[in-house]
Image (cartoon, rainbow, N blue to C red; front, side):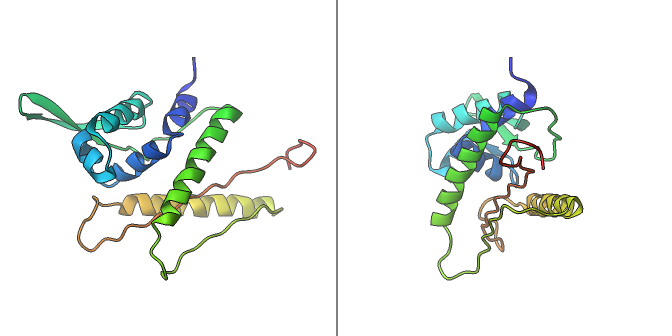
Length: 175
């Protein structure tokens, strides 16, 4: 059986689920609200919410009675620490989902507005590598902390994708 982090990566290695996690960072929403916001069916939204919840990526924020049923509102507890080792195939699946999601986001970019794209595969001092990872984590935390419900007055929709990791050398050794 997969450990918790592997299960989580498998669950989020889907572009729609990445969108759901982003959406539920700034707001507690029901399956119906997620479906409307992402323009998917209620059944599709419910399925993906269940997969994410079962993998520990979502929590039920509240429940309310609606027309004889119970509607759950979900949130993404993005500050939960993730521990454990991840299989290479699971990391690759997550990276593919991130890449697909990045392409979708670029299609939605506002033409003529300033954007930042950076890509690098470099050899740097260990201290600089640590500093860059910490800066990337701080930027992620700041953006997640600032998240608001969709279409909140005075907000703008932005995207950020970050991947920072140490690489092996060409001969397979750690650098």
